[in-house]
Length: 214
Ligand code: G3P
Image 1: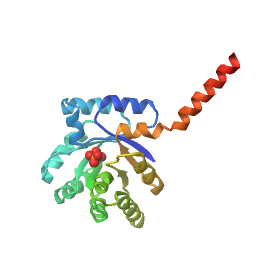
Image 2: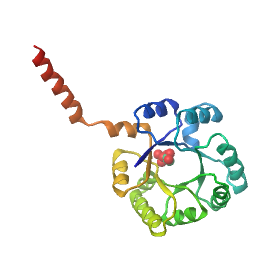
Image 3: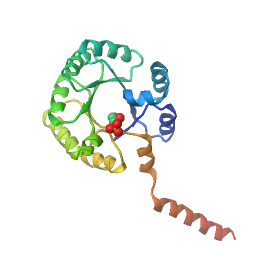
Image 4: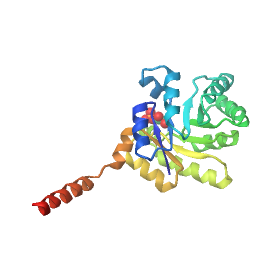
């Protein structure tokens, strides 16, 4: 399973990279706006640090605008993936961009049938938003299961990015389903490391070691 960080914060990205487990980054307009810096500065900083795919989102609502923005974003680096929302215009833009060899990440996917259309339009990545479905009393993980099944049934060459991840159980369930990628906030990544028995174990070993020295 590939681990992406869902953030535009360069310090968090650098830290996760140092852990040796970072495969890519996803951003969205909300995450970028939190950084309070110029968009281009943020992009350049991230692309300097991350070797894997970096998803950057368009803000246009019509397909012509999406395509124009996407081409500019793609020019920043070979590993740029353009995030396009799951709309009719998004599908049109995806068709054009994928034919041009630009990798698309279809975002805001909330139903399995949306994923069929995005896959047919040529998207490279499908991003189902799990936490937001859980928020409205639907099982977000059911969507991931359905999408994985559909991709397998038709051998669509897409990868699933489990997004809107809120806690470690989302990561565990995604891994058990065999999802290709999970993108998560840094705070969730930190929680994956921690176990109280690990801390207690270290403390006990060190105490016993002290006894030996005495
Ligand atoms: O990757 C999508 C993600 O950023 C959305 O997360 O927590 O705003 O639903 P959230």
